[in-house]
Amino acid sequence: MNDTNLKEQPALDAEYDVIVIGAGPAGSTVGALLAEQGRKTLVVDRATFPRFHVGESLIPETYWPLKRLGLIDQLKQTAFPKKFSVQFVTDEGVETMPFYFNEYKEHESSQTWQVLRAEFDQMLVNNARTQGAIVHTGTQVLDILTEGEQVTGVKLKFSSQETRDIRAKIVVDSSGQTGFIASRFKLKMTDPVLKKGTVWAHFKNAQRDTGIDEGATLILQTEGKRSWFWYIPLPDNVVSIGCTGDMEYMFAKDRGNSEEIFYQEVERCIGIKRRLTAAQPVTEFMTTKDFSYHTSQPVGPGWMLAGDALGFIDPVYSSGVFLALKSGELIADAINAAFEAQDFSVSQLSQWYPDYRSGVENFRKLVYAFYTPGFSFGTFLREYPQFKTNLVDILIGDVFKPEVAEMFTVMQEEIPELAMSADPQIALKK
Ligand SMILES: Cc1cc2nc3c(=O)[nH]c(=O)nc-3n(C[C@H](O)[C@H](O)[C@H](O)COP(=O)(O)OP(=O)(O)OC[C@H]3O[C@@H](n4cnc5c(N)ncnc54)[C@H](O)[C@@H]3O)c2cc1C
Picture 1 (cartoon, helix red, strand yellow):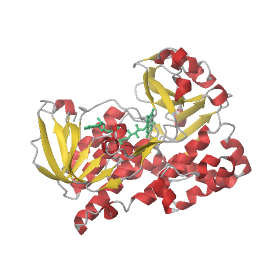
Picture 2 (cartoon, protein in one colour):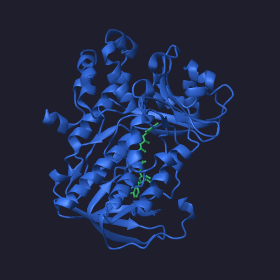
Picture 3 (cartoon, rainbow, N blue to C red):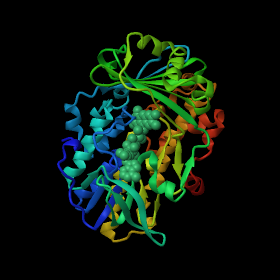
Picture 4 (cartoon, helix red, strand yellow):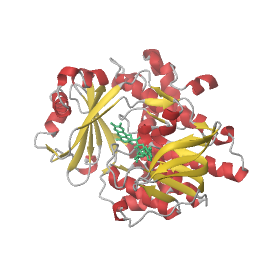
């Protein structure tokens, strides 16, 4: 079912166990898993679904939250290209050996998908409804209701322009980069190293690889590593292509409009230029910037942050949707445990966070290494071949086991930024 076919939105009660702001991958996961456990859950999104969203490449570990949500069979029925690998192309145009995920894990989870987010997110929203969550789309959260420090609900604005206050024991903010609660409580901390900007579009008739490589993600560096391109094959002969680099470089005053910037970078990247020879853009050229941040506090009295609202690192390793699903799953479990124990204290609700944050740090460090001038993964792995498994574990998303971080103890001798924690709570723990 498509939300635009909904005849009317369900009537709302004055109070819920949980209100979830945003019905993207994080919010729909929280909604589905809470409703499944019988919690009275309201999920609201200001957009009407299906809605366009950047972020089309999944990584293999998304399999597990998607399996728990019961969506693997539905995904198998879609036309989404199957992704078996990721391949890096150097700034000199050398196409390195792809990392085939099943060489490291012989399990069907090693194959993942390149998704159209409009369809994928609608699937997640439908699932939240099927599990019993009340999902209101086209409904915006205008404000948070508070009593002292305690968050007690939200003020909603419906498409009719009417507004209404609804209360809940817990409000989960999964409003994506909007970061509703983080902005309101001034919790957003921009990344000290990553200040990036991106321009992207969808293309038809770009050159596609065949066979097992047909659905692969390509990461192609431009000359001098000033920027890099993602190349994500989608259904119907469409490919998503985006270019990311330092914000100041990408959007320097003299560079022209977003399309001009895009094609200037194409000229500096042999691998993309070749693939785009017969291609035409089928969307406008879109831009986004300064998207790397985290939050100083993940949980407070009556509120929790999930997905991008909790933090976002960078597009390069496609970690965003995975972390949205994973944090959604962990938060739903924490809330269910809180209801069972009738303990809604911040300490009870935040037990999942330290391990989660340590896993996120592994992605962050790998991203820092990617952007470090002069650092080469090829050279590093030739010197320390024992760390190849660590590297692939992170590319797959298997980041929540302590041994994954071993590689960084050696790598940080070359890249001092790796030693600093992006998170004050992690720094305190150490
Ligand atoms: C350039 C770029 C490329 C990326 N590429 C990838 C990729 O290839 N693979 C990948 O996994 N990730 C990628 N990502 C990240 C990915 O897009 C996000 O991590 C993911 O969408 C996060 O899901 P979410 O549910 O947290 O938030 P979202 O998917 O953003 O959902 C948030 C929802 O909240 C709603 N909302 C916001 N404010 C309000 C409000 N006030 N009231 C009600 N509703 C509200 C919005 O309408 C939206 O539907 C990329 C990100 C960027 C910036």
